[in-house]
Image (tube, rainbow, N blue to C red; front, top):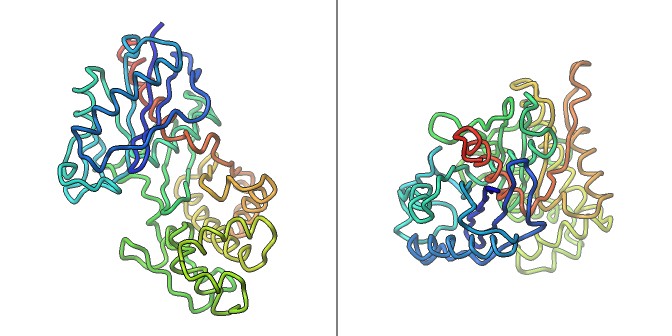
Length: 339
């Protein structure tokens, strides 16, 4: 039997998965190693080759039976996997600038390799998990982490755009002045915009904008005593999950920003579903359910025909990138008759 691999190459970790032609995944959970991206392409590509052999051994298959590989990395990068000449996120080595990572891995492995950015890969996996590969449906995914990634899957295909920037949903502006309880807030993003989705729905937004804003109103809160802003921001989710009202208000703002964003997407794509992933959905099931309900609460009034668009939690969040990359490569392998 022939198999297809997925490789999720991040700045700090590289994760692998393997899938059969029928779409069955052979590895449950993480098959992960610390990424050696800081040591440059030569070392990192060798690590990917070695790690693929480890993953194959874990799955009980031979590497020679892996006929195609799907790769995803953080952006910015072209649709074909050429990293930005200014470097890619967390790839802190000069030789990565302008590096064709897809072609480099293809040459190293001597197997055909497909490429997606990490957010599009996660979006593809969420869509595949919900609808399969031949549904003809359209979904919009948002992944909330340190920043905010996303992806648009139109009729089962990733919308990459002209130069690979399709689905940069975190940098879509939202009409945040409609959100109650944040009057006078300033919400700058690293991209230079004020009031995009990432400037509200991300860990960075909690640290730089939302937590300071609410602590000014409630200086008696225990988090006001934490001198490290990053540690304070990380603590917000756990406190919110345990019912802390200030921390819940922070996530309510995030959810309502997502609701406004979803409204824009509804009127642009008329999708079949939204899929939300990230740390907030990995809290307790009750908190995740509350957060998804708050997204609905944050939406402006919809047309009656669009009231039933569901919002799902991203499945297999830790492995979504690798799985989406594998799904992408599997489609290519089927087209070429490799499986």
